[in-house]
Length: 171
Image (cartoon, rainbow, N blue to C red; front, side):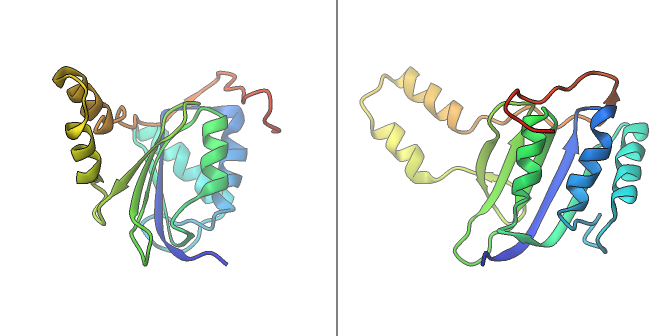
């Protein structure tokens, strides 16, 4: 049995309309709410996404009892369908806080985070780079890559595009 603690996921970017029903179903299956309230059904989630799109906003869903603070099936589905998201999981017990930035179909960027949601890089990682034999310019490149911030999550735009999943994904 896994540990359950708070997690939140924010959806943004382009979403093909043909995926909206399935997206709402996937989100509803996680038992999420908005602003740590009561769990929402599929219709309420779809309405929240459509409202956010109409207002030019992202939409954030929360769960105070997410498995390890994550939404594993939903995150995989979003990545396979090229839908952008950010996820934050609180630190709890032996688990560090975590931020995940999913952009399109690229592998999501996973960062340790503070309880407040700020990305963190370990001092040991920086020390290891600085102690290495690389030229100073290469060390700076490696540090810059380590602390790189992914592009900001953009507001939801509902599109008529195909948004086809990868060939190996069943829809």
